[in-house]
Structure formats: C-alpha cells, structure tokens
Image 1 (cartoon, rainbow, N blue to C red):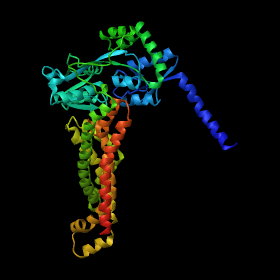
Image 2 (image 1 turned 90 degrees about the horizontal axis):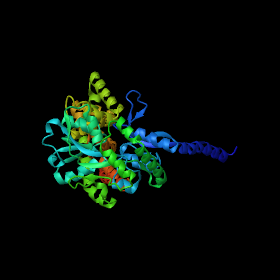
Image 3 (image 1 turned 90 degrees about the vertical axis):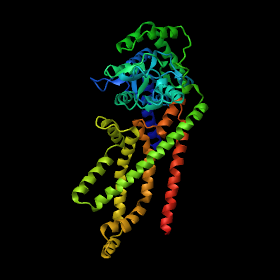
Image 4 (image 1 turned 60 degrees about the vertical axis):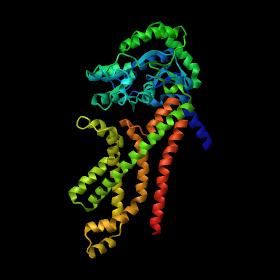
Length: 495
C-alpha cells in the first residue's frame, strides 16, 4: 500500500472521532485550584468536581443536548484558552468587564457579587475603606476586577497592591500579618470566614460586579443558545436552587434576574468613590499605563537575579571546595545537599521557604525568593566549579606544592583563577537561566516582570503586545550580560 494512502487513512481515523466528539460534548474550562465554591474537587471523591459553576455547566450541556467535559485551565488563561479552541465556554467565577465584552462573546450575567474588604478582627474599626489603607499592603487575586481597583487605589491612596495566583493564600497571609487587608468577591470572603474567627468583612461594598460565561468571539451563535438556557433557568428557579445549595443566594439575585429577563442593559462593574478599573481603557492606553509597572518589575527581576546569583556563586564555590578538599563526611553531606536541591523543583523549595516555614519564621516575600533561588542555583554552580577545579592540570598543582605553596595558596593563586576562567561561560549561562527562573517567585507575591506581564495581558485580553514587551525587556537585560561575558572570555584567551 502506498505511503500516501496510509497517511490519508491515519488522518481519517484520528480526525473522525474528534469531529463526532465536538458535536456531542460541551467542553468547558475552569480552574479547580482554590476555586471553591465555583469549581473544586469533591473532598470525599477527589476525582469528582463540584461547585455551582460545575452545576451550571451541567445545566448548559443538558439544554444543548450534550455531555459536559471539563478542561483544566489556569484562571488567568481561561479567556485565551477559549479563544484558541481548547474549550467552548469558560465558567469559573469569570467576571464581566468592559474589556472582556469587547474581546469575547460574553453570556448574560447570571450572578451578582460585591467586592468587599476583609481585615483582621482587631483592625475592623479603623481599616474600613481603601482610603484607610494608605501605606499598607492589600492582597487580591491577580487578573481580577479587584486587582484593577487596587491599582487605581494604589495611585490615589498610596497603598500597595499585592497580587496572588489563587484566592487561598491572600487570607493566609492576612492572618500571618504579611498583608493588612484582602479585597475579593464576597463569595470567596464569606467562605474563608466560615473557618476563621480572627478575620472580619467590612459591610460597605467597594464595587459590584457579575459572573458570566465566556465564548470565543466567533462562537456568538452558541453563546446566544446558552443565554436562552440561562434565562429559562432564571424563570423556573433552577439557578436559585443551585445558588441556595451552595449558600450564595442573596437579595441581589432576584433583581439581577428581573433585569436580565427584561432585556435591560446591565453595567458590568459599578465602583464606589469613582474608582476606575483598567479594562475601561483601550489597549493602547493600557499599554502606556502599564509601561512604568513593567519597567519597575524589570528592575525587580534584575536586582533579584543579581543578588541571588552573587550568593549562589559564593555558596557554590564553598560547596565545590568542600567536595574537592573536604573529608568524607563533609563530602557526603555536600553531595546530599546538591542532589536534594537539583532533584526537587525550585517551585517546591520556594513554597517551603515562604509558607512551610511560616509557623517558625515569617520570611518577607523578597527574602524568601532571594534565598530560594540562591540556594537552588548554588547546587548547580557548585558542580560547575567542582568540574573546573578538577580540570586544572595536576602537574601544575604538584609543581606548586613542590615549591612550598600551602593548599590554600595553591587554591587561591593557581587553581582558583584557572578554574574561574573555565567556569565563566557556564556561569553566564546560569545567570541568564536564573533571570528567567525568577518568574517563579511570583507565587510568593513578588511582582517581577512575568507576573506583571500576566496582569497586563489579562487586563487587555491579549498576549500579543504584553508578550512582545516582556520579551524585549528580558532581551534588554540578558543580551548585554552575554556580550560582556564573551568579551571578557576573548580577552582572557588573548592573554
């Protein structure tokens, strides 16, 4: 059988099931990581998803005559994932914003929420509003209306907006005193307070918003069908029963349902005190507004990488020297350290330093990030220096000892300089890698370049401009370093 026939048969066999699947399944995207009560794993059966958005997805699938299929997508990337076709609809506490309406096919609002401030109980009488939080740290989930509000409040009141990748750790850090307040949806705040007696929610709303489903802009026809299903669920009480089961029904929902069923235009977000969310700007205005933040984040990335690399180099040299000159017990301990740091993810090490040790020592986010990166890269640096030390010809070492040099003098005057010259190129490569790995410290609330770019991209609903700016800034930081290292290496070779 000709090869082209086999290829055609293979394409047919692989394409046919996907075509059938696309018409029988409703693929919906959500993020179960800290996603309660929208989307979360059932505590009794971890493989099963529960949450009111899970029930709404099932409701939509039944109305369309399809079977629901969940697609795990990080919260920040749901819009982009739906646009590229990974899923047909995104449902995970997705907030209605002007920017999202402009870039996506958005359903009618199906739930109204309030943005509320949560503070420690002892602070509830004097930290009532955002204006009271000037000079203090306020946490929230990145890529949300709450974060955009905090950015505007940061300019107005001088508070510090702290972005998190989930809605669990902001409240943990509030209890630990790392932030002074948390601004998030009342759905999330009230759920966290059920297990916390040391936190309090301020009664005044900072803003009012709505949850929606999002479709690709080219999928408006399916969005319209879903809108009819949602309206029907509002009329017959199905949505009310879903929200009551999850304890989130309140007096604001009947009014929202009446507005939706009457066909009235509903403002996506209403804020207090004239606060502005960034999504009301055009992409060009957002770019201009975010450029100072991107530049500041670049400086944070560069400084963090530099100080981490300095410590990694010092520790790496000490570890390498210990492995070459140390006794057996010391060598065994150092080998264990190197294998531990190289054999476990740096992300896990950062979590252990920042959250795992919080009960014993509460490291500031930047300090934990600095130590985590330095301790991890010290293991890699030590291997570079150890191999460089062992690459120096033994004849030179023996000649130096014959001339009466001590081992310290041999290392400092003969072996060390030659080893450093051999290690320069891989050391430069490691610094460039560290510059990029610094993006991982965003999990510790450090606002470095990649994290700020994610916020920017979420705000305008596209990665094109933010991605290009981020790449340009990383290149601006790494290329001069690589060029300087090449010049120094060429100079030493010439000498």
